[in-house]
Amino acid sequence: MLAAAAGFAVAVGLTYAKLPQPPMDDAAKAKAEEAKAKAADATKKARADEEAAMDRVVVHYKKEKGVKTSTTTPAPAPGSKKK
Image (spheres, rainbow, N blue to C red):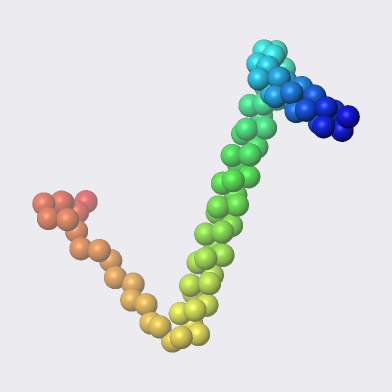
């Protein structure tokens, strides 16, 4: 009896999973777009925070190890004119 109930539950689950999603109305579409935009903004902020943390780690490492960095300006490309 337990096997029959489990088999029935699996069959219902598979059938339900194959049903197409109902069409969204305008309010649902707007809400989905807003959630997508929020997620994108959160991802951008998280990436910027991660990059800032990596920069701090590099500065700290160089400071601890006594690595000197030279800040040189790149040479102008041949044929380019300085304004």
